[in-house]
Picture (cartoon, one colour):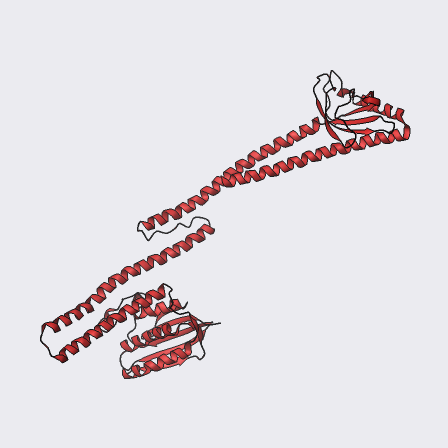
Length: 451
C-alpha cells in the first residue's frame, strides 16, 4: 500500500502539472489573439480615424450578433467588442455596459452579465486599450470553449489517475504478495529447522532472481551446518567409543598396580605406561582441537609467504632416518622455489602425518615418494607409496575423524591423521585427493601459488 500510495501521489502531481500547463497554454493562446485583434483595431484608428474604427467595431459586432441574440444559444468561441467614450459610455459594439473590473493593460478575466437573455454571467478574457482621444476599446473572448476543453482534460486526467491508482494498488499487492510468499517460504523452512529437522532446505522458486540466489546461499549454509552437526555427533560417538578403551585400560592398570604389592621398579613401570597412555590421549585431543579450529576458520597467526620447497625438504630430512630404520626407501623430488601463502607449522604437521602413515603401513622393502611440482599456477604436493593402499569405496570415509580400516586397527593410531591433513588443505584454500598408486596409495595436495 505504501508503494501504491507513493506511485499514485507521484502520478497525481504529474497530472496536476499537465493540467496547469494545458490551462496556461489555452489562456496564452486566447491572450495572443486578443492582443493581435486589439492592436489591429488601434492601428486602424491611427491610420483612418475614429469613424473607421466605429464602423469596423459595428461590423464585427454584427458578425458576432448571435452572441447577444435573445432567441439563440451563445457561441462561446466568438468575441465581444465595445468602443466607449467619456465615462465609459457605449459608442459601438455588442457589449452595452462597461465591466467594472475592466482596466487598461494586460488581458484579465471578467464576468460579463449583459450577454444574452438569461442574465447569467459569462466568463471572458478581455483586453482594454486607451485611445489617443481618451476613448476606450475593449476586446474580449468568451472562455466557454476553453473551460469546456479544460473540463475534458480534467476528466481525462482523473480517469487516467484512477487507472494509475488501480494499477499501482494492483502492482503493489502483486509485488507484496510475491515478496511475502518467498519470505514465508524462508520463514517456514527456518521454523522447521528450529524444530529439529536439519534436512529442510529453502525452496528456490521458479525465477532465477535475487531471492533464488539468497536461497542457494542459505541452503549452502544449512548444508554446512548440517555437516558440522553430523560431524559433531560422529565425533561425540567416536570419542566415547575410541577413548573409553584406553581410559579403561589406564584405570585398570593403575588399580591392579595399587592392589598388588610391588617394588619400586614395578610402580615406576606402571607410572611410565600410564604417562604413555595419557600422552596418547592428549595427542588425540590436540588433534581434535586442531581439526576443529581449522574447520571453524580460527587461525592463531596470519598466513604469510612460505617456501613450500624448503619446508618439504626439511620434513623429508627429518623422516629420512625413520624410513631407513623401517627398511623403506624415501625418494624426494622437489621443484625449487615453490611459494604459497601458508602456515609453516600446520603444513609441516600435515606432511608429517602423511609420511608417518606411509612409514607405519608400508611393509619393509617398500618405497615412499615425496614430490612437489607447479602446475597451472598451483603447487601440487604428493606422497605416494607401494603399500596396501585404501579401497576406492573407503577413500572418502577415511577422511572423517576416528575412521580406521579394519586392517589398521591393530596398529597404534587414532584415525585423525588424514582428517587433520584435509583440514589443513581446506584452511589454505587447497584440496586433497586420494588416488591409487598401483599398488599403494597416493595423497595429492594442491595449493594456490603465491602471485
